Amino acid sequence: MENNIRLLSDITSEIYDDENIVTSTSSEQVDVEVMILKMLKIFECKASIDPNMPKLHRKLHSKSLNSWLLTLPKSYRCLEASRPWLVYWILHSLWLLNDLPDAKILSNVVEFLSHCQHPDGGYGGGPSQFAHLGTTYAAINALCIIGTDEAYASINRKSLQNFLWAVRGVDGSFALHLGGEQDIRGAYCALTVAKLTNIYTDELFDKTAEWIVSCQTYEGGFAGYPGMEAHGGYAFCGVAALALLNRTQLCDVDALLRWCVNRQMRVEGGFQGRTNKLVDGCYAFWQGAIFPVISAIYSQENKEVVDKVLFNQGALQEYILICCQSPEGGLIDKPGKPTDIYHTCYTLSGLSIAQHGTCTGDTVIVGKNRNELNPLHPLHNIAPKHVYNAINYFRKEQYIEKPQN
Picture 1 (cartoon, rainbow, N blue to C red):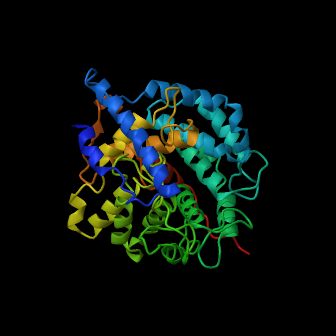
Picture 2 (tube, rainbow, N blue to C red):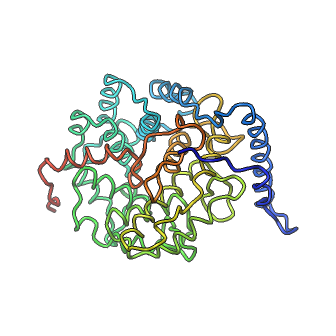
Picture 3 (cartoon, rainbow, N blue to C red):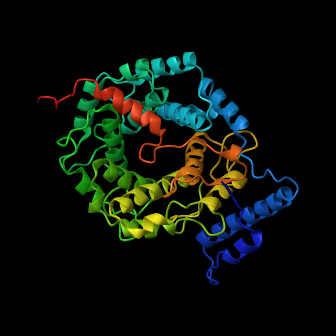
């Protein structure tokens, strides 16, 4: 089905009111809203002439992504320790756009990621780099997107499990690397790779759920570490990890929902990552993907709220399609920001969530149906079939026990 666009006249009533107390935060918010309203006004003029608006420029985005997979701009040299992330962001974006590269290129990607695999387990940010849970998560997701026997077989599951044990804390938390910081991202990354590759054990994740719940704040969201501020990315990691553990009953889901709905911006339509922060395209996923998880939790608990749409899907799609597409290809944080691969991946992921992540299973498309992206699995941020295929493949493999000391 097609969804109607919000009218500019309706949006202007939601403009931010600083109550005559001007701060740097309030000034920045006003500046962003003014910029968004100008773009929406221009869009309304164009849409009155072209009924196909807004359009997802999928060919333009695909062209940029395929180019980046082969040759990155010089500006990406600073991400030398994030190369599996770049691979994952590009492949996942191309999957959403239904334009994955050919088999030869994908086989070359498998070979490259094999060089990033550390002898002691896990994946580093590049060849010969120390293993890190973040780049391990990215590499495993990329290999699951490729989904060939070659990709699956390239994963050393025994050494991967050894790595997870090595970075596990006695309290159930996970450090991002040996001697590194412990935060909720580590717990989430460890859980999702363990589940996808069938190396999960109850012993490996003993006390992890309780540690994650200790990160839920008074606001209802989750912080990176107990006592810190609630944040969209950490909130996603927290509730997704609890869902993977089947322990969501330990957290305050109602408080999490209240916090999440208040992160959707009234004028912009997109999400902010924290209270009193600016809208950002990447939170279309980090915040948006929390809603189908909450819907699933409520469904299991037979709560009536599951029959309701928990966020404004149309407004989120408008923000992405009207304000976050770069004319050079790729997607952006907000108008005025440069395009980058990270925001391309997570903004497209958020668009898919807004289109498919309903409690009823219906598809909601802003613009023509050609704007529709492939659906994704909200817990892993890869396609549902990629999750299923990986789990099914590794179920056939011999179960790996905890390594002996």
